[in-house]
Length: 128
Image (cartoon, rainbow, N blue to C red; front, top):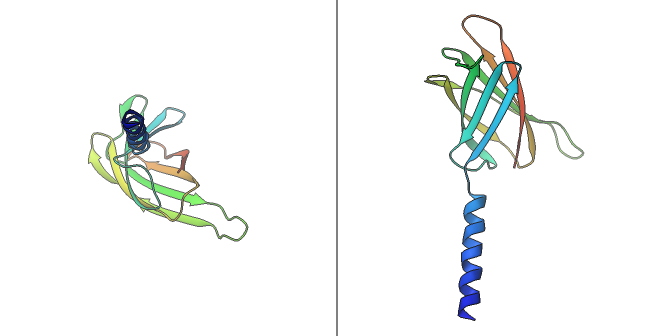
């Protein structure tokens, strides 16, 4: 009986640790690639996300990066939007704190405005 209890506790702890893994996702639009990470799992409320942006395989530096996360209106619930500008951490990495009001599937648009060249928008989703 003690052995079964130990096995159950070990399995429960293992599943809990797997669920608490950090968030990571890749998104792409044409030659622009964005690697999204978070130190903690995405939850309702404030979430700090880091973005590594590459265009044509090179780190995209000194760009203006802004985010728009939104969830469309559903029956009995209004549409929700969260907009924020990201700050540059150097070497093509940007950081932003995004507020997500509730769990579910959020559309995420990443707007990238380089100092030279064309603007681009990378679309992806966040689901938690």
